Amino acid sequence: MTRTIHQTLHPHRRASHSSVVTTVAFSPDGETLASGSWDGTIKLWDVRSGRLKLLRTLRGDWDEVEAVAFAPDGRTLAGLGTGWDGDPFGAVTLWDLTGGRGQPLIRVPGKLDAIAFSPDGTMLATASGDHRSVTLWEAATGRERMCLPEHRGPVWSVAFAPDGAMLAAASGVVPAIAERMGDDPLGEIKLWDLTGPRPREQAALIGHDYGIVALAFSPDGTTLASGGFDRAVKLWGVAAGQEWATLNGHEGWVAAVAFSPDGSTLATGSHDQTIKLWDAATGQELATLQGHTGNVYAVAFSPDGLTLASGSLDGTVRLWDVAQVLSWKARA
Image (cartoon, rainbow, N blue to C red; front, side):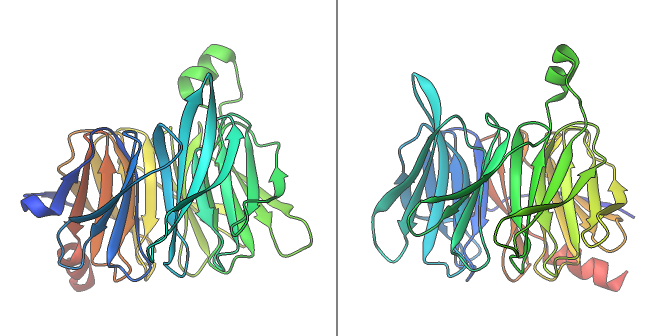
């Protein structure tokens, strides 16, 4: 049985940017939500009351914000954006959230699409669609550690395993480009072993029909979830490097995936304007959350797992109370 939940929003559980909201992330203590937008801003929201109260608006050396990430200690926020100075460039700025100003860290030619902190907070990984590569950087200095090239197509998403021993990178082409240019359409996830002196490619996971744009490890690191242009969500066993479930139900491409903190629930956001909640152990669809009026680009669970944040083409950030759905699941 699948439940469809139409959100009747309290006015303070929805907030806006002036353009597409591309990214959302909760601070590790769950008190703050960061959202980023193509309007060029990152907004920090106090969510302790269950409502969105604007704390600060941050601006970096870019025109559009593509991604944000909190450092594991919660004291630093990384913002990644794209700017144009004749040609596109990617930029990363770090903010000391204890009161310091933003510090530009990285600026490179070409667009950057995703960013992630290593679990120990010492490294940043960025994904480049233009260069089909992943780069590892020292988080403290912005010094490039190494570049991981030779991905199947533009790299759209990166994720560190919870223990920091592995990095996953998702790549592949947009369907229209594959058809027009005759490119290999299959999406690919590369798993990189980070335990040695240099990263080593451990596995290449192929199963999506087109590019893969969203990745998330389960909290215990045993499962990897992916979403892509083929409208499918796939679950992979990390140790075996094998797909064990395909979750179908979205009618648009899947732009975001996130596990609940206890690993029991998977949330997915799609260009069909909906968010779906799935049982992460069985792949059963639990609920569809409706309310956005544009493509859903970002989803994130709060650390206590009771609230889901989302960002959309409609310019809004929304908070969803998923406790009701999760309690219903527990009784089923």
